[in-house]
Length: 452
Image 1 (cartoon, helix red, strand yellow):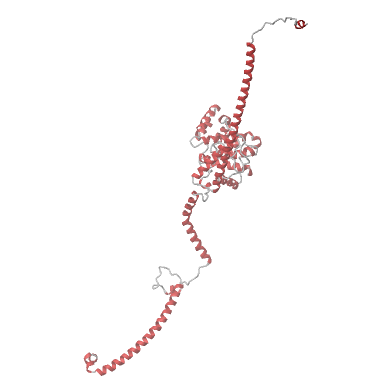
Image 2 (cartoon, rainbow, N blue to C red; image 1 turned 30 degrees about the vertical axis):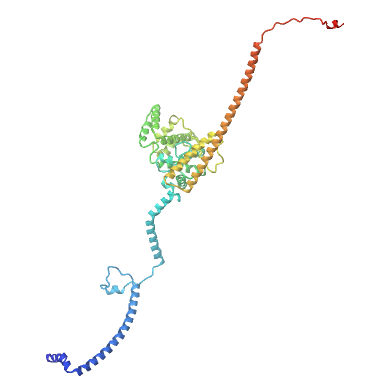
């Protein structure tokens, strides 16, 4: 083997090729022909293979796109044969899945956009383009008493919330003789509707509702006060005063404590106690004596039965000057006419100016609505009309007074003139001298005799 290989190497050496050029030339030509043929065939095969490869790649890409999603933990090289056989096929999502997916996306978008929408609403509200629910931002129920009075004011000068005033007026007109007037409960949905209307500053007609609904609204307002009518500070002292046995001492202590209450609490307590005293005056028909009222309302007022009974017993002594008068709201665009006398116009002006101040306070707080803007213009128009009418009436009254004074002065001048004339006549008569009477003598006529 070594010899043959050495021989072969000798024959293939370049020295041998130089010695036998013809032999190597024929072999090189044959090899070149074979190489040319093989190259052409290779080229032809490579083009076919290229085309087939492209088609195969396209098919592979299509199937790869339609293949089911594989878990990220799985490696295609490590997959077991059983798992590779059970590969998921592609499925179009159903309508239900699409709806659920779209719903989830919408919920996410809403959650993201919620703060932005709130900011937009606030900005729009500040510019007066869109209204804000005043009942949520400036409620009347469930707030301190003074705040409720400021937000829902009686414009005739009585410092109690409007809802309490309306309820008292309604019961005074329709419920004094109704049996168990403050024991019965009204329909909850109607009570909540009235509560919402008062919070939204709507005009409410309690005459359209039943007495139990109105009394339930009254109790709900007082029950939701953060602090009792008698205040947390003075409440225990009121309880101690109610326990005093001597009537005179008890009344004096209660009166002293009532005077220490804040103004709005004192006004509210006085109106409520006087109103309940009117209820007890009709106990023969309404079955609501002092004890029954104390049982029904003492939890609402956050006081004991004994204290409420004592306050009702000392009503005349504690609140002698309180007279319940029916509330007359300020005039509106639908009102028939303006007052005819200066006193009525002045009183109505006070109401309209109080209402105007309340509207300005709400607008300055940033809560503007189209209805409040319309009400603002309406109130300003009514105030202008009232002032014009008052000025014209005052001008007419001044003219009447001046005319009357002129007539009186003229009359007095005439009287003085007549008096001067009479005085002058009297003086002239007094100044004339007294003359003696003269005797008449007969003188004969001599002219005729001389002629003869």
